[in-house]
Length: 216
Image (cartoon, rainbow, N blue to C red; front, side, top):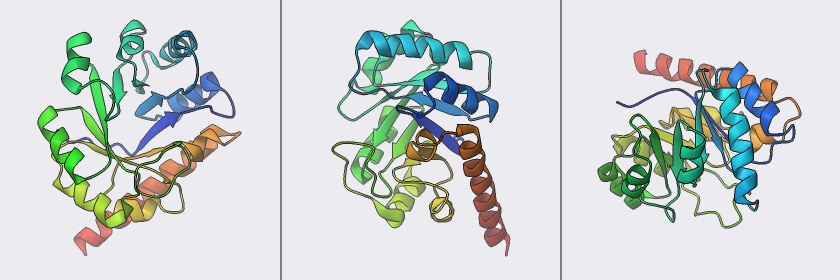
């Protein structure tokens, strides 16, 4: 079943630190919270993942670990997110066979999204929609039209990502991107709860406009 939940928050080096950022996400009811740490030791990833699991456990926020299915299993996360160059969805599920765990998958073009439908991940990331400096070697930008076509053709839950913030979220929603991931819009904020709330308010406003257009 396709989920519509709005904000999916990716944590990468938050200004306020990982625990404080996670606490803000839980307090504001963020549905998905992904831990994405780069250029650090596996031991550090595991340490932080344990902290985030303790914060999110028992809340409505699902905790996703980026790339590392072993860390996800070790801390009993809610899921793992895979890139195109990581383990396959099938291999991740074989190594982490616990029922109910989520396996997400990044896709960057029409072909990858079509292939993902046959693999059966819990959701797919679609992007980058706009230019973004978050990754050292970003994939080519999709733009709104291609993003919308990919989302519209996919039978899976989709999460649009890449350069999305308050200024362009309404356009993303207009083109069919009803779930969206952000990094910088919250990570660079010294007040993550306020940043999250602004994004959620912008999403609600965008969804309301979309519904009005559909009934008019």
